Length: 257
Ligand code: 48F
Image: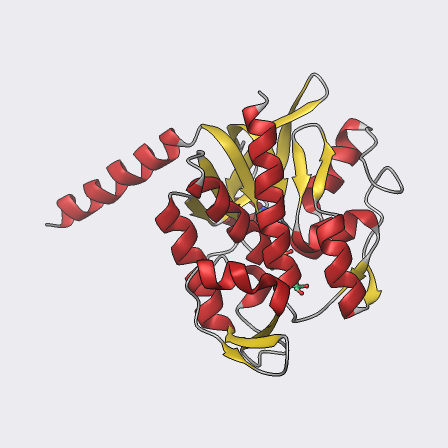
């Protein structure tokens, strides 16, 4: 029995990893925008893997605000909430409350059910960069990096890469710093996020969701971070809409290749 269990996991896991060595979409970061992007890309029949450095993907959504585990979603994003089958209740006109643990678990369930593969405990430490294009991600075990062990990474080739790493915009930062290139952002680099303006931050999150370098897209807080716009706190409609928008942009880019 013990050997059967171990062999089952090893064979299944490495078949899964092997099938993800060449992707349509590599999504870095399993916060709400990344998970929603994974859902729509997988639903469209694309080969998509989402990588998150933590044991439990979900980013900043599990904890609601200050660990009070509810989130607010505005009317414009409710079609996505309904499509994903999340339970919610109306709060005031045009605003809804969702239990944040239910929301996070629900998004992860729907994305994987649609066919997205999630690799947790994977840190993306670099990208594949060829002929002026981002063409994949360089991954390592999070514990390897945490321990500072000198262990080389593996590579997943991908037609598109999404930086959904949240406030730190890690992938955009790495691409600009290591390759000396200008990104399609107001500064040509990572401008860094501004302080809180919830309404403006929500609006600009959608505007700033785009391809910032050939093959490299941004969503969620990373979209506002690279373009120097506002944070918005525990209102999550913009994150969901950003994930849907970026999936549509990435689908077009994949089809064009
Ligand atoms: O920050 P995060 O939740 O991303 P998001 O989709 O959503 C932002 C909101 O949660 C919140 C907000 C809403 O109003 O402002 O902050 O923009 O999740 C980002 C995820 O990316 C992972 C990290 O563990 C987290 O789960 N991550 C970050 N850098 C890396 C990474 C990396 N280099 N490799 C792998 N995962």
